[in-house]
Length: 200
Length: 226
Image 1 (cartoon, one colour):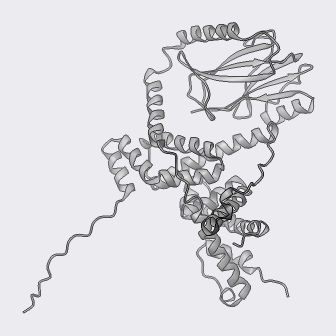
Image 2 (cartoon, helix red, strand yellow):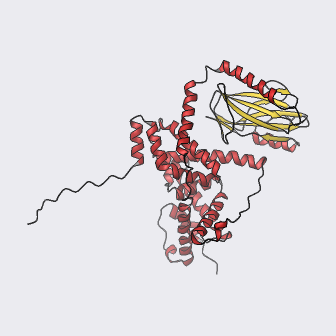
Image 3 (cartoon, each protein chain N blue to C red):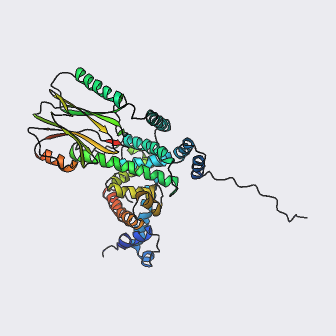
């Protein structure tokens, strides 16, 4: 005879929740621990965003590190008006835009650099995966042709998957304005890709 | 027959607003194709930089920078104002003494002094309130040379040529600015045949005016004080 009493199920393992872990560390007064969680969980994502924003390895590394240095200093005052992830991207965004502004001004007036020719790497003849890398490079070029604030909104929305309300909060802009900006940018990107011979 | 572009002009915004697309968009072949292309583009952007990883050891470098800042803060800045003045004088004197004589190409170098420590290099200049900005320029034999520092592009916190606070000796110029307020500080050197008109002050306008007057403008790296 079967028992009608169900055996107790093993409790499902809790998913790691970096937001919770970092906030708990903050509540314990450990900024170091909170920052370690943020670096571990979001370090790569912030780097990828910075890399596409500033389009330069050295600058991306600099701005990436400064983002976390500044995050450390701001953690004590973190007001929980957004998730830590959104807040972190807000810092990264400011640093990237500052850097781009500085760099643009300098290049425009004093250091007109010729655009580096797009020299095909030796790996470009090696099929699929590298062809994809080549397409990604073209897309990165096209993204660079967008104004920094437009590029920023496109990356935060699609590369980082932030919602419009989240982007609006970190950029202090209105979500509908961001939606319009992104929806206008996508056809530009599509055309840019087509002009460079890449089907979107 | 012309291609229907309603997906790009209307549909995209509806997608971004998470609003339902009208019936047209589910029957029009051009719109269906455009939507598919849009989805592929979104996926491409999402995958962009997937292979990019921050350099090995970056976390250690972040901690190192945090420690440096802690240390600077711990020392504070008020107590060293007097020794700092002595330090600045000594470093300026040393710079004069070790600089090779004449014939140097025009240029502008900046350094940040915290307490008695001088920080050189770094691609993105950073400082804290209370730090000193040391400027060292070579004029390359220009008849008129001017050092300027703009704060946030619109405030002129330093402008001098041969008078104080500039120290000029032959083709070399030195000046020091106390970075007392947070903001972006842009140091520059202007070399011209004659003195330039009064600045606006506005970094963009002033440098454009200087260039239009035939001057040579050397821009140093910007310093961000926070």
